[in-house]
Amino acid sequence: ERPGSEVIYDGLRKDVGGAVDQLKKFNNKTILFAGSLKSYKGIYELIKISRKLETFNFTAAVNCTESELADFLRLTNVPSNLKFYARPESLDELFSESFAVLNLSIPGEWEETFGLSIIEGMSYSTPVVVPPVGGPAEIVNSTFGALIDSRCTMEVVDFINYLNSDYEVWLSYSNCAFQHSKKFTSENFRKNFSDYYNNNLGLEK
Image 1 (cartoon, rainbow, N blue to C red):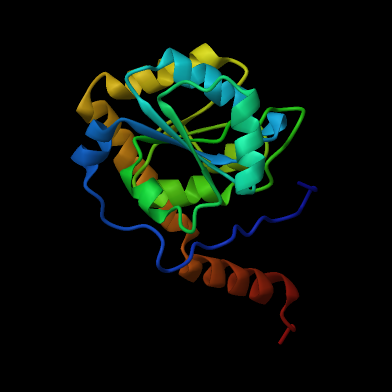
Image 2: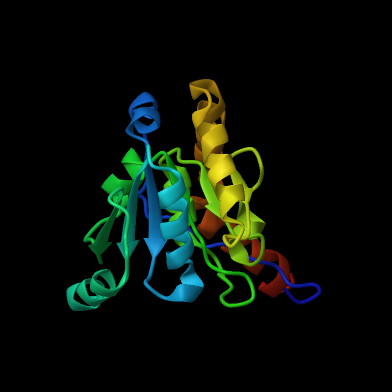
């Protein structure tokens, strides 16, 4: 970010987020990864993490073709608790059922500029794990998530186990995630853009 610059974050679609069954989310123990099969997006870190959390179910929604996914699965030893979906039509149902959402992009290899999928997850009351650099690091704080270099896989595992240690712990993170997501509504985006224009670009009277 340049000195004196101001960031106006994108707004969520109006149909994203809302009421969820939080106890069901907690009990589902399903962790969502939204990314790609590229190594710099942390796909191999996801595999390591899923191996260490055998009592959880992992879902990977990846931006690739069915044939690319088939090639990857043929060449990769994937644990049975990790399921892949190539370009699912909608992530909304996956977000609404998830215990946590992971962004495992590797610092120094790939830097996320924003992380829309993280905010979408938060809008469904989902705690998040994000890299400690880039756009997600500007959005996430310790009341509803963790900033962890995905190469430190045991730190991710420990955080998820901490969330799982007590429903009230997870619920606090879940509630804070939903409340924070409200800062990124389409209405707020329009208001922030309008305020910025009026304060900085509007014609002086």
